[in-house]
Length: 303
Image 1 (cartoon, one colour):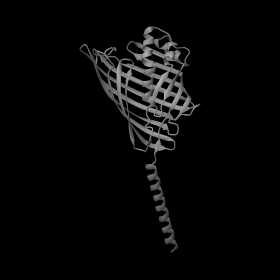
Image 2 (cartoon, helix red, strand yellow):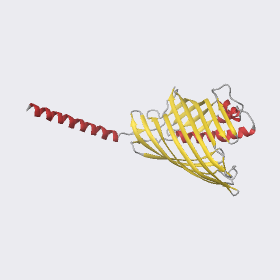
Image 3 (cartoon, one colour):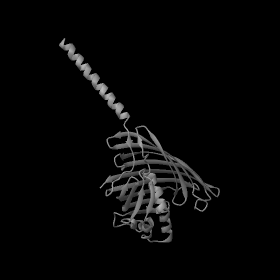
Image 4 (cartoon, helix red, strand yellow):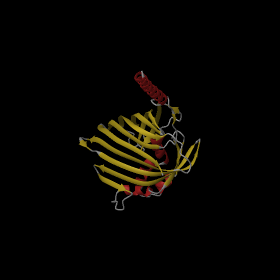
């Protein structure tokens, strides 16, 4: 009799554990999180961004590949923060660029003291310079101030200034940062729920990128929210006055990646995006097949 009772109690304990497990799983399935940018005033962060890019192109039967690696570290200081958004002082901490082109190789690393003479060396003068970003709770960069002052401090030839202006002007930088930071739905969501973020932005004053992003909350682990992203990409000439205005552009692609966010602050702890673009560019009867492969990573940590 005692043996039967013991077996019964054992089965009852097992059943209780199963029920408790199922309840926990059910509760976890209904768990929701409010994802938004909520960095506190006075806090400082180190943000690192890197881009590894390979451009395969064929020009008049000749393979002309370009390989580029860029690493930039910023210090973000939260100057103001309220329910409407944040004002962030952003300072260039380090910068490294490595380019391999048919015309030659170019390198620069602000952490080195023996950088060779190259057109990229002027970019190193941006290190230590600051500008301001204004962010909404959704991560949208609504305004950038001071980037033109950073560019003016570099000096250099007019052609270099024009190139830097195209890539680092207030509006160009605002568009670039929006792709990385404007990812939040700014509402409570549950695992497996998705939301959409679409962008149209100029690239280097020559092309327009149409980017349609779908984000999905895949898991909640404590304060960490795991997000997947899938995007479609289309490139087109910016306008008739751009260097590519008379070209026909047939470039489309996709990108996929994962983002890990601190759900209490909205800080992006890590983000890895793999991008594939292919097609061709045609001008004056010449067609240039092209494939662009990029890996874009971002990490953030509190200081």
